[in-house]
Image (cartoon, rainbow, N blue to C red; front, side, top):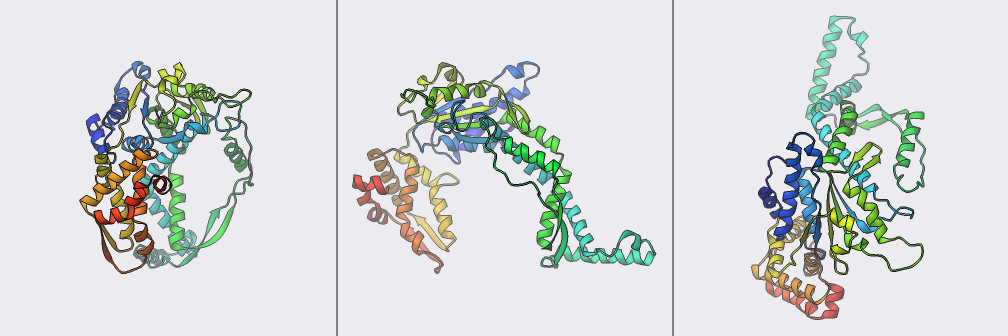
Length: 446
């Protein structure tokens, strides 16, 4: 994070996302400001709050992709949620605090993987020692100390077995070892609102009352090695430190992407007891403006979590949000509509471009797939026309068109001899032009 300036962040995002210059600038500044805040000394650091962002644009223009790639760049805990899944307090459904609980779980798993990587070499050495102990079970310490000759013989056997283990000569040999067994009874807990962690906490309490027993199991060396490495790694990791680091990451680097925020703007227009969209906004407000949320890992403060909201805003507008929530999203960016030239770039430029993806898929069948430049232009033109005639779903239209275009090849080219397939403009027109021109057909097929 320290090394990435806003300009460099935009350059990294350009490798995956076409266009959307203003959106990239906004998120790049927001990310850099998080690092800047952490360099501030004294009480001022706590006073600097993140500038949350609303991305306004139709589906398929890159809103989610920008947020996801941004989180990958910062190595930050990232959670994508749909605002429409939440309900106001008092109704059955997910409460908004579960957002922070889920984000904390993601952070704990991230830090756990990092810690496991740090102790992997030590865990591997310890696992190997335990494997050697399983392969030489009769040579107990007291037997080895009876004579110098016995000790030397044991050392020679250990060295010989160690060399064979390193060479992989014992991979299929079976050994018997003790495996921990979970005796906690299976249960389903129907918890009240805000208590999704109740089931986990009950299970933890019961596991303390009824600790898991050990069971003897026979497994091959390659399986036993992996089990022992994981077991030793868990012993080497300081769980308290792990949770402390994870909570710090959530509080200072966490990113929440609130998709479909426009779906909870305005009331349903119905009378009587019903879930109020405005009620969902009011419940979201404390989380976004900063509050303390209880999780199974302890209390987590949301003052400095970055929230990026997104929506198409076809019916409502950001100004229809309740004023308090509007004030928590000071930065608003309108996403650009994708043009034919943008579609051409999306098909070819990004690291994960669609043409590269299909080439890799058919490459697994020893098929070399290539596209003429004119063919790519024709695909992009058809995508633009269909988006204009029917619902505009942005770059996702390319997925439907590419699937229809390559349908025969994806079905037929399985387990056959290696061949080369070149997609020309003529092939594109033969397979797609009639469908694209027929509005009823394109509505259902593309």
